[in-house]
Image (tube, rainbow, N blue to C red):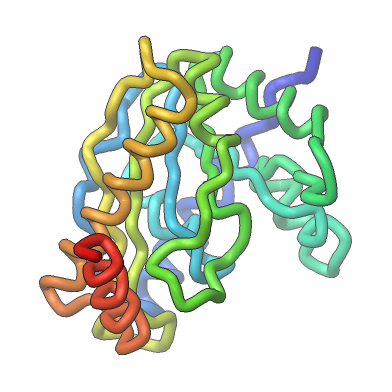
Length: 217
């Protein structure tokens, strides 16, 4: 049985790095009280940048074990991802070791961070296709799911960078498909809320328009 990934490194790094992140990017973060204070939780965000995980971290004092692609564990910053308690995922197949580690986090009542698109969205669509991993893990462990929408531009003193953390919902009694569909619709709703308040890039506004047209067709 896989051991629960460590959290002490995350607890060490977060208080040091999050203030620096805020000072540089000036992100807007809404819904800070929406991540449950106890119990198994899967935090799920759309994915546009390697720093997306930093936008959920300030919303909770609980450490979040993020699932990250194996390439991050091979470069010069590999030490950072290991110290932060990230779970190494080989995306070339079904990584049972990563899955076991994720289940260990949730079975021990921890917080798991996943990007359901599996990779950064480089398409013209509002969201990339959602994989079923996040929903599957949540349903298996009867974990709460917390949708997060990230929009805007990562640049110094950004005027548009925004994270909106939605209300948690229970996966108890849901099928994996139902949980995945609910997650997708919640993140779409949160993205639209961000854009309605002006937090987004021109590309994101265009994607949202195309998405509305496709839904109406």
